[in-house]
Length: 275
Image 1 (cartoon, rainbow, N blue to C red):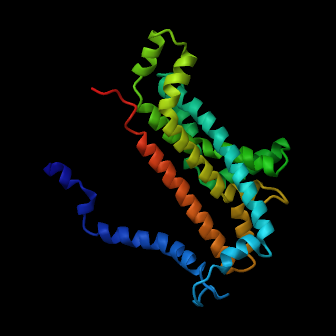
Image 2 (tube, helix red, strand yellow):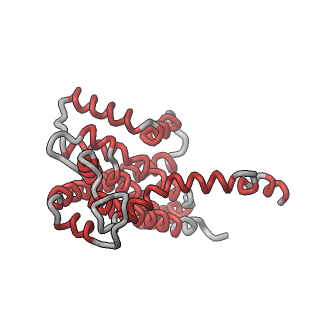
Image 3 (cartoon, rainbow, N blue to C red):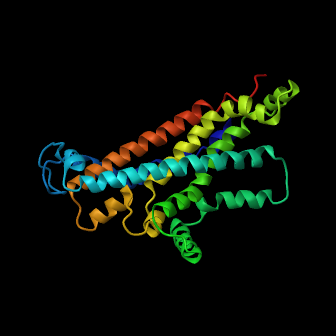
């Protein structure tokens, strides 16, 4: 007990102050944006009273058609990227976790994790160069393909973590009862993996929905997602309706990430056999 307490990071001098400072720097700008999205004034620095006018502006204003089109693109791209990357991640997780030791396993895991470790700007430039080299037309399709590749490791991590918590005896028992490998997977393993799969899908979905750097490099002309549409609007000057739209995106992202966390946590302990 004494040893465990000695290494408790919360007892190090200055830990609380540094934590508070980091949280302040990270979240104060978000809170300011949220507060001023309810500002009745055109000014983004002077409070003019509480109002929902800018939220109405997002849906019914002059730029509403552009934002609605961008939102539809973002949602459909995120759904396509989330579903496809999750399917690939499930196959990868089964191969990595249930496949035992095989030549190149460490290299395979490194390749799966690389999109997380490599700076996103490098990934964006490399993807643009690759698409240009093979003559792939930039546009909606190029965004979907790039997002699928980029989202695979984000979907893989919760799925692999969930699979590692499932005893292999479940599948062995099913096969002892004359189930084929496919039947054991479909009727036994897949339902137990479901929380991890759903958590991985939600995480991949929100990563794709919020992505700006890769999308901005490979979107081509005439295709906008919400992050690129917001960036384009901000270049002309920060307006209160942009704050309202950013707040809506922030709240939606928080909801999806929270759902992913709760689903993954709920299913975290139900895959091991009881002693």
